[in-house]
Image (cartoon, rainbow over all chains, first blue to last red; front, side, top):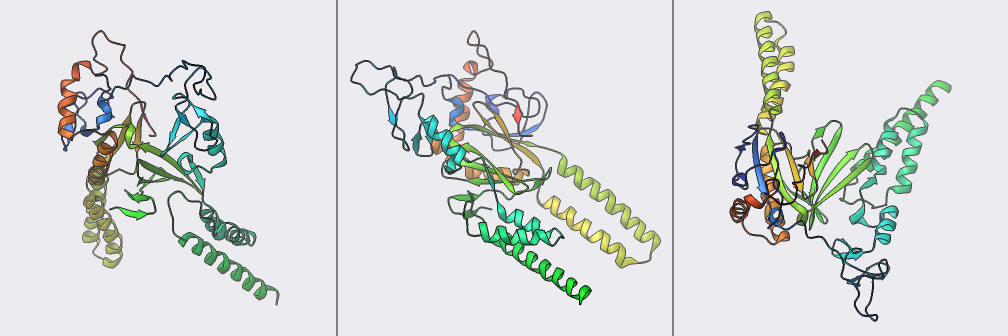
Length: 184
Length: 186
């Protein structure tokens, strides 16, 4: 059985297996740091067995789109290309080819691949708070443009949008009132 | 502790650390770490099938913070008693600090938590208190075990002890050991 060990996060020394899953603080034998070490079954799995892709034996066997000498084992859920074990990328419960992963990641359409999202409600609130005449207008524009867009990975409330609109409107009214007071 | 939002369950509430707010979300087959950076949110996924371990290390940050607060409070009380005037002003300073001290003590000792996979060790800033980390671990463990198809924690420990001579980095005569992964994200 091959595997790895768990390391102390302070001294980076390997921790003894007897310290795993004790459900209480135990000191690191090397540096004495108090640790709770939770080990999961994958720790003991054979991590040195990589996927290599099976070779095509007969001419009529389906081969991978990217590696014609490798046997196809799965179909890309998006483009339908045949893929070998090397090219198969599991995304959630599905399978994608490297090209579709790259395309999906660039377009931001595949939620599983997203690593960054911009939330315009926070930008609108910042613009609304900024004390100028122009920025609250931008905040209202952002609200009108993106207020109904639900692009969040983790669902969020509407509170920031409401706060942005409230502050922006209040600031515009304030500027208008100041203008009327000064010039009339 | 857990609040449900669509496909994700909020595992921890974020806490401010170096101007970054992070939150852990529990998905069907992974843990999602959300980091706020201004108007953008960064997402990092830890799939249950890839997790090798979770390491929680107690730190002295919370205790040091409490000690500083106690010293400051003691100084303020001494000054208030010795001066003996404007008591409401002094109480206005002392009460918020005392509330902060109680809040800090109630949250329990601080810690740093890391998740270890086959290829990296990643800091989880949102698990910054031992209580919170232990509660999160109790929620995580059955899901990770189910995803990896393993046995009980005791079985894993027993198997790890039995396999200890063959485990890296002490495998005699085997492949050269991998260097320990450097903790990332911190």
